[in-house]
Image 1 (spheres, rainbow, N blue to C red):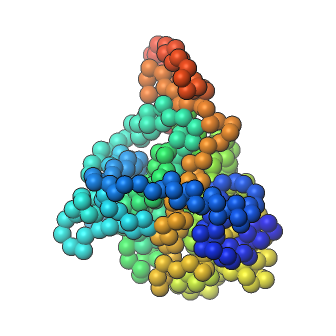
Image 2: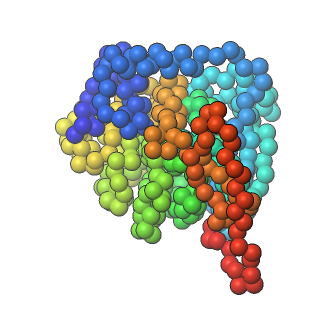
Image 3: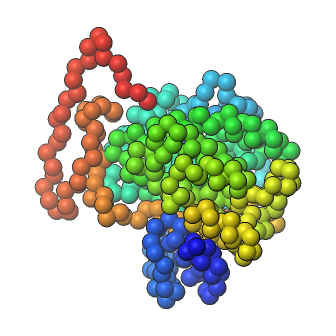
Length: 409
């Protein structure tokens, strides 16, 4: 019931204090906070974001796992040979406005004004895992975290990767962003087809979660999923739980479900195998996209459109045991389906809260041995500031023999 009490007063008082309450409870894992304290915190956070205008495009490195057949016209089709992997660089315009994805109305992108893919390198699954481990290596504390983004229905390939780059930029996330993209199409009439490709992508996402949990030195794996992507995410987490790893080897962080397009009874079954304390749900009673989804699903209510101010919905949400936050009074236009990323202050503070230092591993550094992935990979406390550097690790893995088999990925 405490989570529901959060939602009952989210939008009282000043707008700034409300946004602080939303995200502090959403990703900080903290208890209730007084309104005066929250206002003071918001002021200090605002100061932290003040900076001189950038003059050069920013660059965001994304690890991408995709079940799409390609990146252009074929991006609407499901791959027939499993997931494809890549390492990409996304250029962010220097005068980017938080909450927006600047794109050209026609013609090619101008790096001074628009989001654009500036580089792309295809990888096989083993190389993907090794590159990810290399990027984690040397990072300290929460900078070892991964943010996995799973987009929803009616999302093109470009929109998916640019949205994650926008979230990382606006939230100032200091860890490693990973995109899981699936052929959800960008046609509102293909809802049922998208559900089928989401189902077909379930195993690939579950395998990716397994691999992320095995990355040497990784901190926490946070998941941000939107719309139909929340159903796909919960199905993959349920699959990992059935396989014996409901918390991804103890690495599962915050699971944020924005505008979840899930039948509440289905969600209850998915949640039964997981620890509900990891899960936060962002709901909005005026989400018109979920109203359409409810109609297409035979008038079955969607989790993301429940109204905590209605006694019946409030009771149903309370029984789930998850954190619930009501965004009904916040509008991003007529549809009201993308508020999690379109509200600048909210997405900024989500990044701040994800990046908060954890006392138990604030001083832990990811360290790699002589090869990208081997038994010499460890996590160990970093030396305090000003201390002499720790001795270089020289542990060498056993020499391979004819019968040696590579570690599973």
